[in-house]
Image (cartoon, rainbow, N blue to C red; front, side, top):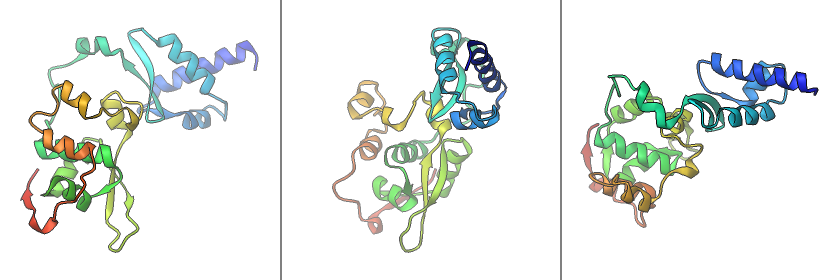
Length: 202
């Protein structure tokens, strides 16, 4: 590919990402641009925008432009968040993030209490949790996993970047849901007896 053609591809990738309504994978970009190898162009654009007011980032294998983290406060509007997560929803999200894919029964086993269907609905409406299929066991229960939007919201490239217990404690994030995060990050040696569990709503 000539330098001129390479520059044209970089500009095309840049334009496609600016116009996209949601983050795009390299494969989707390639298809959109006639099958061209877009990875070198993505790397070049990421270098070009690094340290600027907007940056090109990859989250969950999807690329998009975002405001530089140190400038995000300048663009924050009055409605910071439409809905604050309840303690139950926070616990369930942590369990799904650290153990995905998991079924509702597995979530309840880790939490030690029943989980309201509304809690999972809230997380799916927020775009952070999705149905990931069914477990191939008797009854074929639905299993849940996090989404690329979850990674993007928390600034993670992949689940491998999820913080560990020590990091969460140092950041003060284990209070008041310390027990839930400890259970989510570290697999319990023995699962609680579901018949002895209480119930909790979202």
